[in-house]
Image (cartoon, rainbow, N blue to C red; front, side, top):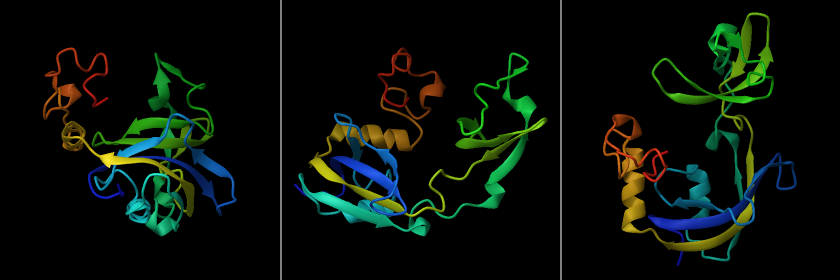
Length: 191
């Protein structure tokens, strides 16, 4: 089978910076491949485009310029936040809010975003909300481990997740209270 829309793809890869011989940024581990359904908007478009038509066993090398990957790094995504928002039980959490740590946060609209701690000052914390790979060209190499048709259940679950719900919880998602016990044990699939 060849990689095409609605196919379940399993692959190993190494992502490097600067060139195909550059420093390793990220890599799959043996026994833990990257798995996704092709054509559902889960991967970078240029990454998927380069995989189109490959079969099980095929090796690949993909170069994605930063403007077609995670874009440039924007200065306005580097902000100083008051230290008071990082308090836990009335105390500043210096262990969690340390230079170099990535922290999950929410904007004023409730959108989740990760921020990297750049600097901890006396009254503020300088955070970078650019994607960690913004401004960098991407160099992937790897192998296609498996290609198969996605099951109806996999497609339905992914469609539900992308619409804010899940197959157990319905359209309200895990926070809707309609899951029953499904979300507590992670079996609903939207956690």
